Length: 387
Image 1: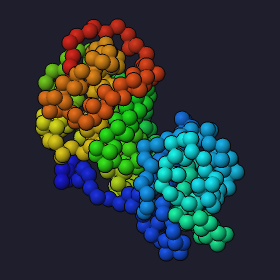
Image 2 (image 1 turned 45 degrees about the vertical axis):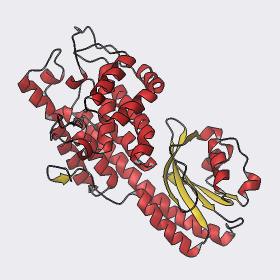
Image 3 (image 1 turned 90 degrees about the vertical axis):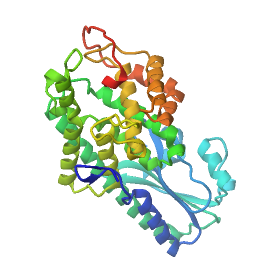
Image 4 (image 1 turned 120 degrees about the horizontal axis):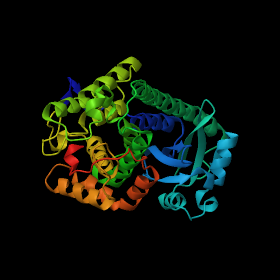
């Protein structure tokens, strides 16, 4: 297993999905016929409910699905009142029309129990419990499920709070160090959005869960945090770096790993699976599949998929954005360059193909979150390898 400073870059650490599966087993000991338990997260910035984790014993899980909370009257009311909802006969009470309703009817589930999740009065999302039998959710069963759902909510809230603390600490480090190159808030937003689009597109190909996609989305913006330790005379240089300067610049990966390791140590969260995703992204986002990347010259499957995704997103953003040393490329030009790099074995072909398939959405993100011009630059020939 590849390591960085003696620490495994990726490994089999328990996840929220694994813990939900365990809780599902415990629920079945007291409530038979529970076919599925799923949790959707709510993003207040976009008003979207997003599939997150599930334990599905019968039927197939709905994944990579999102829906505006404001367009679901019943869920919106539950989010305001804090009450739960019982559907005793899904076939009779649920009408087809939305992707979720259609999917629910196709699974053959007969009844459901839905409960909103809150953390300090803030809506986290919803828990959906489905059964293959009608009328399962009696008063006694409801009491048991409320207890189990509270456990699920606390588990998710604890992990999300820890992740938010990690992200806030990393952001504070960045701001305290007065990082001033192209790591603007808009750049960080673009990186998160690009990475999530690519991850969703390759999810089936690489077996990525919604939980993993969410973590890639959250941590993509931290990929270059080590640049806070690079001198401005190198970071902001308006010209090609010489060999010594390039070595110093490449040191940002090592510095970034040190920062993340310190944060994980301080919060005692190094054991978390999602923390490993964060470390993988920071440590490996400049590695190439042919072994010519840095700092460890990893090859092919030695590079975790989350890092491959962020690498493609990062190069695309570098090419289509203003930088001190270049003017932005057109989106189609950047995609052509990425395809060239995939053809010669440097980038993951599936990730590049995913980006191209989502070209329209990628273009919208480029336009919506474009940085202000950085002043006059002297255009020069530049390739993606200089990112």
